[in-house]
Length: 121
Image (cartoon, rainbow, N blue to C red; front, side, top):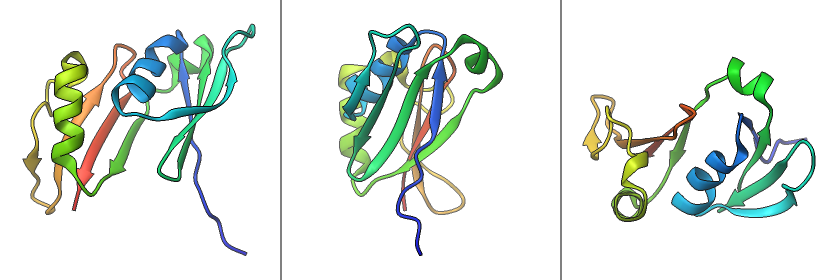
């Protein structure tokens, strides 16, 4: 037996905020859409990665996730985010920088404080 994918749940008080970050900014696509239901959610993915975006005020208030996405072209990801969603660049990580542990990184943060660190080793 082997595990093939980790699919985190990411909770929002307003799912539209998550769609801007994950779909519009970093290019995930929606594979399963239940956005019109009473409890909206969707499964989104890109490049073999998957996430479940869920609208739940209760859980969103309890959990502000920080995720790391590794890429093989951080400059391309950064330039796209800077050009299309500069407001999502994290104030403490709004430029690509080389970290002491050897990775190049920058960060995105939406208005619900979900943070994504983009990283290239």
